[in-house]
Image (cartoon, rainbow over all chains, first blue to last red; front, side):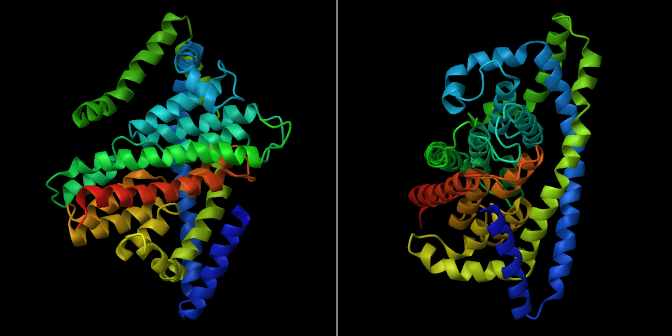
Amino acid sequence: MVNLIWLGMIVFGILAAAANGNIEAVTTAALEGAGNAVKTSLALIAVITFWLGIMKLAEEAGIITLLARLIAPAMRFLFPSVPGNHPAMGAIIMNVSANILGLGNAATPMGLIAMQEMQKLNRGDPRAATDAMCTFLALNTSCITIIPSTIIGIRVMHGSAAPTEVVGTTIFATACGMTVAIVADRLFRIIFSRPGRN
Amino acid sequence: MYALIAEISRWAIPVILLLVPLAAMIRGVKVFEAFVRGAETGFSTAIKTIPYLVAMMVSINIFRASGAMEVLVKLISPLLNTIGFPAELLPHAVMRPLSGGAALGIATDIIAAHGPDSFLGRLVSTMQGTSDTTFYVLTLYFGSVGIYRYRYAIYSGLAADITTLLASVYIVNALYGK
């Protein structure tokens, strides 16, 4: 699926550019995309390093285990293959909390830490996603946002009379998306189930 | 309610930065050493995502800059018209899972052109706030642990995106419909 989407975007892009007589845009766009990707990764070095340090402290202080125990029932339902006291649980909880609070630059490093911990539990092909990872990403891409702070900022900038009015509609739509993400993840897990996988 | 959550967001990180090292110290952890040991892998984790992100962002950028996206928008707009989805917002809906920056740019343009409190302004604000850049999140998270077989993760991600889109249209129509 990823391979098809990836190739599809390139092939249709180049065909469209040729049809529009705008073929040189392809080269510029490709290099610009590569440049943005590298910039994004480099910017991640600082936040990831910082949060990895804090997470290690939280882990050794026993805070992660404590957090994991607090919301264990919900987590056991969502991530049956991750042991309750595993550091992956702690990172997942931190990532979800950061997402809820709209703390984007804390949520991403926490998410990457959670992925590393889940990869340690991967007993199958190390190149293939585990069930737990798919559930985690379904949660993340449909992320439960309570305060969409960026868009509220833009609304303020353009003189909105009620900039925070979209909070209610956002929570409603996000809750619908999350529900479908969790249900779809469960269904696909059964359809795609392969024995011996986490 | 909003003010309370905003206050929590403002305090969350400083409070974590105070409590976590303090708790670790009380539990007898050598805090500085533990922090450094944990942070050690930060560089390699971030760098590992480069090839995955380059691959994905090159493809998305070609798709966007070439005009192929407009063709796709034209193809699916009759379909969306039938559910009461305004054609002006289609580029945003298509862009949202692919590129966070581009989607935000489109949302800003629409808010500037139609006003933040117009029907379109409210709908695009909701659409921007409710879902994430699915392809970026998948590429980054899987890339950081060297995974390139995503299995069904893309299907559930896109199913969620489509649901959030439909739910946004429904709720904004219901509350602020023209």
